[in-house]
Amino acid sequence: MLSTQIIWLFVLAIPIACVAWTVTHEEIFSGMRAYCTRQSKENRSPFLRKCFYMLTCEYCFSHYVTIFFLIITGYTLLFSGWRGYLIAGFALVWIANLYMSIFALLRQAIKAEKTKIELEEKIIDGQQQTADKNRISPGKRSLLKKTLMGDHWKDI
Image (cartoon, rainbow, N blue to C red; front, side, top):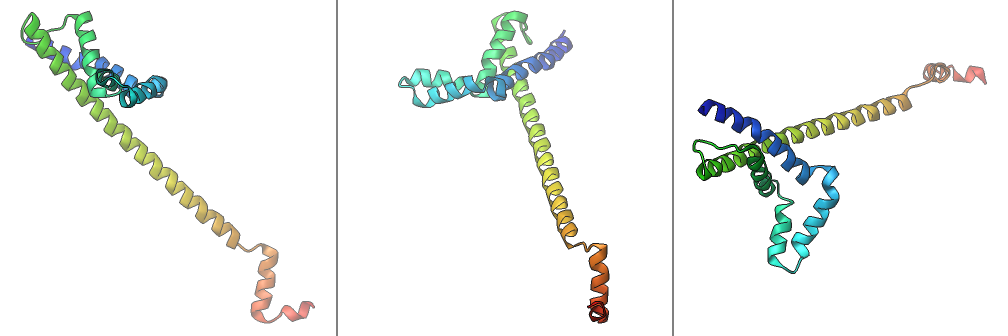
């Protein structure tokens, strides 16, 4: 029974992390997030400022997503009843935030690698353009050869 609960813990944390990350980071919710961020800074009511802030923070928002998933799944951990829900809730939030942290680090590493590749490509393209500019055409090469040998006066 405990092994099943542990498997459920790690599996159920995946959609919690997915929903919390999507709402708090992805472009599809950027309009709502911008409004909530503005309200969390400018609203007159301290209570409403905190409420709007909780919608922009992945850690805070993951608590609400976890409560939603606990209600629809009825998942408990270690105990049945309210104690099992309480332990499951905090465990799910912790695992979901661990998943989101790993995902953020992975995204950051991928973005850094893409930026490095783009920079290297620009450097290589710049070097190729410089080499192309310095390259001498065949007609100019023969003139350069005559100039270096002192024969360039013979053509005049």
